[in-house]
Amino acid sequence: MIERLKKIWRTTKLVLLGVLLGVLLTAICLAPPLMRRLGAYTASAGPTAEQTETAETPETPAAVVLRLRLPAAAAAGAAVSADGLEWFTPRAGVAELTLAPGRYDLRAARGNRLAWLERGVYQDEADAAPVLLDLDRAPDCQELTILECNYGEGRAFALDIQGAEAVLSEKTLPGLAVLRVGGIFRLEAAANLAPGFYHTPLVARAADGEAVLHAGLRVRAAGPATLIATESDLRAVAYNLNGHFRLTEDIDLSAVAWQSLGNEEHPFTGVFDGGGHEIRGLIAPLFGVVRRAEISALILSAPAIDGGEAPAAAIALVARDSYIHDAAVLDGEVRAGAAAAGCVYRAEGSILSGLLNTAAVRAEAPAAERPLAGGIAALLTDRSLVRACVNAGPVSGAFLTGGIAARSTESDIARCFATGGLSGPTGPAWPAAAAIVPLTEWGRVADCYYTEDGTAPGAGNQGLAVVAAVTPVSAERALEAEALPRLGEFGGTTPEWVFRPDWPRGPLPAGIGALLPEAADEAAEVAEVADEAAVEAAEGLPEAPAASGGRQ
Image (cartoon, rainbow, N blue to C red):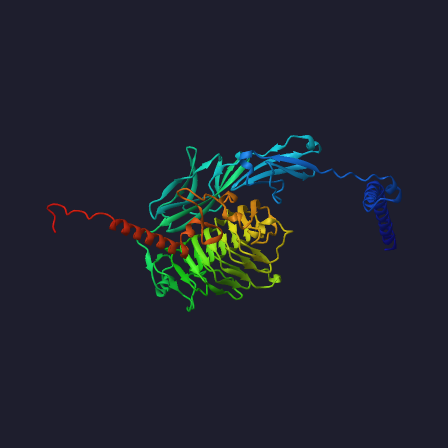
């Protein structure tokens, strides 16, 4: 037994000795690389005093001034950028950008077109010729097209797009498709599309640029519109939320506890034609939630809307994939705690076109609650488009406060005019787009004007949005078409904008310029004068002889 224990002990000692020798050999082999790595770690912690004396400070590459040139025909109203965050207006067709050496995505934007050029920037650029950024690299198309077909017929519409290699839809809508046939891009609508309005934002792409086209399609149902002449008729819309309605008389709701038409569960999905008539004194939004609806030719005067802690607006609280155009909110007040807007609180994938607001808009919550206040809309999302709109009412709030909108995410604002005063966290040190919208992300703000003395300039963060040609004008110059060249047409057979003698605050969208009450009065006066002139002329003519053979 003792001999066995001794044998086990000798064996154990040999095993332990072998393990110790193995560990020692491993340590010897790994010591050099470990020491080198430890030395590297030690060096990275900071240089020694001796190293500090001898080390040379690496030189920071000197900034380079890169000159970008735009063709003369494209320079007016254009902006250029090297990072998509900061945009600069060329002077005499040339913009100078101060950049560190490296590779950049150089961009030029004008209207709904964007061209780009990937290029390296080097130390010797100072002596180089200006880099040409040609907007003709981008496809060319109009900003908005409204198409129409009847339910059940199906149609293919040719799109006027030049220079595109592909056209992509940014929203998938069953029953709508973009196809290329013989070099022409077409929007094809299936025959089974339900009646309603369909908004499909399209991007026309080429190798070095793109253009955005907002296409709207009306699918009309058969049958005449239901006429609305009284308050009870208007309330009855709630029982037929997908109907087609036309207002035939002015309606006063000043003493009425109004219940907004449509909600999240049952939105309004029909057509509401205001017929140029007036609804007065609303104390709540006319519509709550609308989806694939069309609202037009409507005047809401003297609203007194207080949303309390909920959002507030005069025409609609939420507009989803809808088309609201040629309408006005006149005077009165729209106020709320969290968010307030003159026309629409939240536009989701909708088109707001030719709208006017003169009501006071107030978002009363403290800045810590981040309230939103916008003259036309508070919040734009999901590729909405706001175009040819005017805000002339005061807008106030403690956080995001904008003449046209408070916040725009993946949406476009184009050819708008703001002249109402702002009261909010804005100031001369902020970028100049605040008069239009103080926060834009992944969208476009282009060809807009605001009066210097009526709206304080200012903007928040432009998160990779295109901002081009947002221009201040004086109140006097705002009454001259020559000072507003990028708004659109002021003359011709189909003007987009008009001036009126009784409206000294700037241009008006043509569609609502003819709907305002003063315009109707003037038209009646003109007609009366014309009738009197016709009577006087008739009285001065000799009496016509009786026809022979006629009855006396």
